[in-house]
Amino acid sequence: MLVNIIFSETGVLYRDVQNIFTRIEKNPVFSSYDLAIFVIPPIYDKEVVKSYLKNFFGGKPFIAFYSNFVGSNDFFTEKGLVGIFLKKAYENSFCEIKIFENLEGFKQYIANRNTKSFVHLIFVPYPLVNFRQKFKFFEGFENVKTEISGLITAGYDYDREYPIIVNGKEVKDGRIAVLTFNNLKGCLASSINFKKIGPPFDFTSEDTYKLKTVDGQDAIDFFLEILERETNELSPEILVGFPMLVKNENDNYRKLVRFPKEVRDGELIFWANLPEKGQFHFVYLLPDRVKVKNILKRHCKGFYPVSDFAIFFYCVGKSAFVNPKEDAEFIGKRLSIPFVIVGSYGEIFTFNEKIYMLNGSTTFLLLKEGFENDES
Image 1 (cartoon, rainbow, N blue to C red):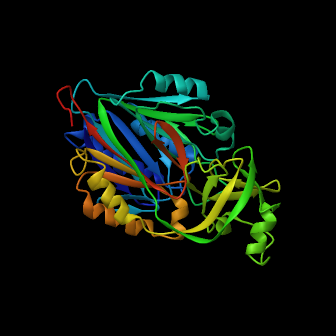
Image 2 (cartoon, one colour):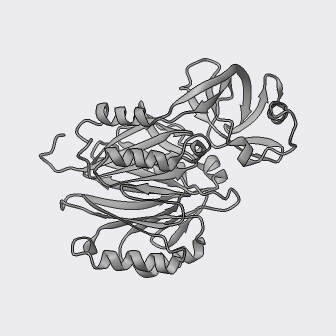
Image 3 (spheres, rainbow, N blue to C red):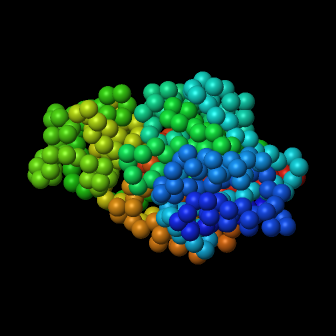
């Protein structure tokens, strides 16, 4: 698979789209690309984005999503539009984009493509209230043999919608878009580094993502007490400073870091699922660059450093603790292959044949186009 990454940062959407279009059309190799992926900065309105992308790139399949930053081999931007153009090297390789409105349809789709010769990228629109209800964070998925990764779309403004755009059509909350590659092999991994702060706290939750009580106290009152009641409002800007290491009461729930998202209708809402009962520690997130480097070297043999493309889903909540630009530059010094690092409100990851929604992580996927005689 051949990959060409182009970005434009004029501050005017039409010019950005036109710049990318002109450069790809004049490229003797990539003018015949097979798929385009666009990463959109939050400054650009979704209706205008849909129109321009369809007018300029509607002749071929494309998927577009929002991120508050994009880093690559030689640039980092918070306001630029980025186009990633993929061209297959072998005739028996292909990709397709599907949109699903319910969990059962998605389950059947994966079941029919549940082998190592398929790789799936899932794009979940933000906000994700209906996604929680209709997909239940991919509840009940078992025996997942194929690599599945992805993200919840992200931006700085917590009040806006960050949809997915597929071939000019908007994918809103309650649906997901799935980009599937056949005859591409993937190495999927995830990394997080943190330090626990203070004692453990017992908690209860409801509806899988609402924190109800902490040590028998109302969850919101507990957080306000920590802040010594210097504020009466728990805003997203405050809550992002409280990542928590969560486990259930039986200790058989895989330990995960979770971020509180917002207070809605008197309830403390989380980005991703919680057990009904359990304990948590507050944590301080640390740079996980060394972990990422070691994972690339040890876990991704046959993929590092010779893959065709790498994509890193980087939790936006980490930005309060770690500079994503510095992480992108670190990765750029160790990867000569084309890559992008994008912000997410939740990272999707398959582990032990199940699908997890992560927070606070750097989850990444290395892709390498295969062919029949390639057993690496």
